[in-house]
Image (cartoon, rainbow, N blue to C red; front, top):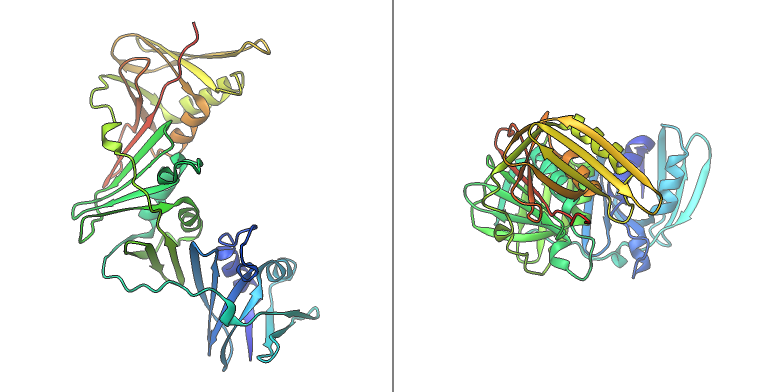
Length: 371
């Protein structure tokens, strides 16, 4: 069994799915890619049993067959190879693999493809389509607030809420909450499920924004299909918190600021904040915002003042600047609006000018101001 493939094209496709491979595999075969040759089409699969990704590319071959090739060896080889056609010969009897390029000939041993885990089959009728750019955008905005706490699995992924009017994406880590509603996309049935962070990270990094994607789902799995990229993942079996009760319904004070100016000031002041809390205080008086931080252990202190637009009573409130910065970076707007009420209630962060067909809301809990 033999095929010829572009080294650059093969390397690009392998890097797309290499993030699925875990460093602590329970099965040695999970350190391998599954290669399936069907005449002039090569399909490559990577899995960690929870998430599976497949990519396809054109090759020159008249053969059909499959084999498992060790991922790290192949990636390291291609990384150090200039762009050129390479010929890969596979011995079906002992799974010996010869790779021939202009620079030389290399030999490795593969594995029987029958040892590779079975790939979940997409047999569900529950599906909807949306632009890949919109899916990537929703993932990028919500994944920042996904919890890394293994004790609370329900919060270790993004919650998808599907109805016939829109798609709602929600994430929370108990300190922040992000809700992104895509109003130009809808599903056929009312459904909800939690998608793990790893699968969403792989999607965000590899989706072609110019394509359309189809999402199909059942009680256990989500399937995402686009041109030459297929992903399936096991859904998180847990109940997502009732996010609607957490969102304040009355935050009457409105603070409007230029995004980049506020972001730069926060980053500078945070340099002098306590590294355990990253606490930065926002002292709002009229249309003046005073940002300050301190680290008493090192006698550090940072102060800046910004002009702002503010509607409400003078207020002093503190936030974890690192968490706040991550939220601000994800907002696509020149100006942001921070809606507040009291120093001990959550602040609501929004773009001052909403994107078409999107409703974005970000919540962040305040910190107690010492003294």
